Amino acid sequence: MTTKKPSPRKTAAKKPAAKKPAAKKPAAKKPAAKKPAAKKPAAKKPAAKKPAAKKPAAKKPAAKKPAAKKPAAKKPAPKKPAAKKPAAKKPAAKAAAAIAEVEVPAPPRKPRPSKFKVQDKVVYPHHGAAIIVKKEKQPVDGKRVDYFVLEVATDQLIVRVPVDRAEELGVRPVISKNAARKVFAVFRDEPQEAGSNWSRWYKVLTEKINSGDIYQVAEVVRDLTFAQQMKGISPALKRMLSKAHLILNSELRFALNLDEDETEKRILRALPKVEVPEEG
Image (tube, rainbow, N blue to C red; front, top):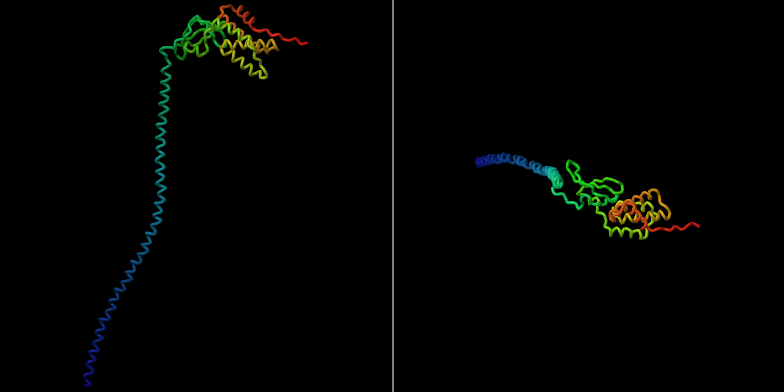
């Protein structure tokens, strides 16, 4: 009975031999050791941080946007000189048009006819009546221009006036005999005095003499004659009065067909006489 007991122990010893495969299980744990290798993808998380680092890289394109605006600003810049070129061409076109306008009327094929002719009696402003003694050509800027030659009646002065500009310069026909009678009527109007503004009055008288209007010249003779009789006038006004007399006499002589002396007598008779009160 006692000898059979050990046989069951052998089987019990075999059991620990079966435990060896259990020892192999720790060998299976090696793949568990590989798990830390699986942690390496966890180390990739900083790689995931790289896109976070890309955000500043995204800021760079934002900085590039103003850089992109610079070329956009450059594009209109070249357009400006391009716009200037046609602007420079326009004045050139205007200059050509202006030249064409000047060249067309310069050589007038059909000059404007004048209403004056040789031997006409006319009046030239500031000088009085004159006779057109002839018509002649004078060279002007390489062209031949027609001129009237006027012989002034009072000053024995010769004046040349372009034919096509005679009226523009104030040349006019001598007044008629009926108009001459109205000139004497001006002497009967109330004279105008200098007043306090003597320089203004002198200027007005000068403008009347140079106007070429015989009625205004008659006013100068009337006013200065009155001033001379009342209180006397300066030497300058005396010369002005003498000039107005000559201009008035020259036209009335042609209008009334009288000589110079007879015309002057009529003027003096028509001027009113002023009685100066004697100082008592």
